[in-house]
Image 1 (cartoon, rainbow, N blue to C red):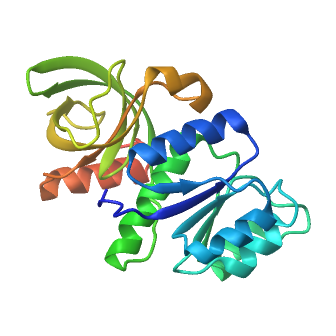
Image 2: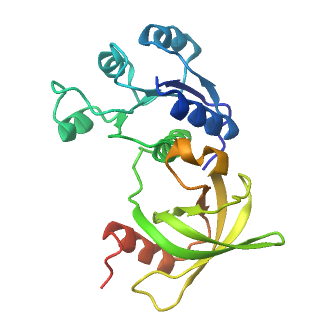
Image 3: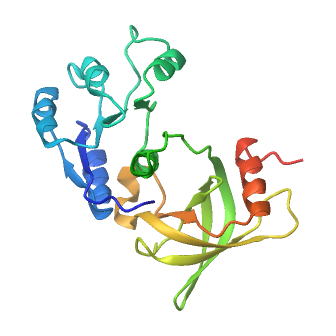
Length: 237
């Protein structure tokens, strides 16, 4: 993930445990986070020119507010299913590409979406969600003088979330070795830690402790295999 450069994020979510952990992680990642409790308070925060808003549709007036303010400059992530009268999900997303919407989104997924947005926003590229596949694959991790074992919790073509009891700090460069079905030789990749779930945060996040990593030394063969693997949900012939 590119550095946040003090990007501003609003988090309007009445779920106190989830909001607390989300704000903690976003703050550790270097974002400036504010937590308006109502749509009226969120409107007042717009004068500070936030870069992203994470908004619960359970708040009164949230749906209309999101539709009115969402733009390429202020992306809105809705956390809950839309009401019955909302437009068709596929059509709603296609028509308003500036709004990212999740159904029963968990905190780890929110962090991934935020990282995708900030990276694409800083580079001027269109946001595109990386397809992911559930993991369960053992991984050997080494960095500095540390050697440990973990489990790939989920995997994309460019990175992974690795379950680890003691995740390394953000920015740490690690070596990740693992084997995937459909390929006789294993992967040995350099990766950068972009965010982490600490053990004390795990229960609130409904996620194991561990870290999100970005692979940055993929050769063409490895990249092609990973793209095919995640696109076809791990079903490699």
